[in-house]
Length: 66
Image: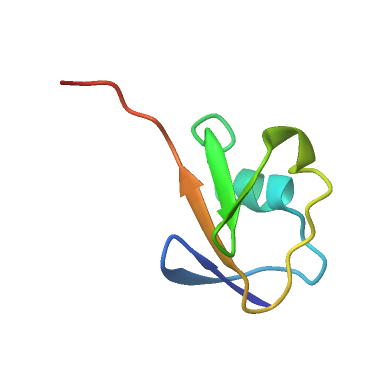
């Protein structure tokens, strides 16, 4: 199935959850927040948040600076 991650179409196995997507992308130590179809998903729910074909995921990392 195809999921749009930060504007780029990526292919994943059917039934993938948010946590698995983040791990497969190698971002598990970088992502601080995730949104699914413009709705924030709490980190505690990533392991149960199932994704479907055509979903739009935004993965965010907070950067300090000034």
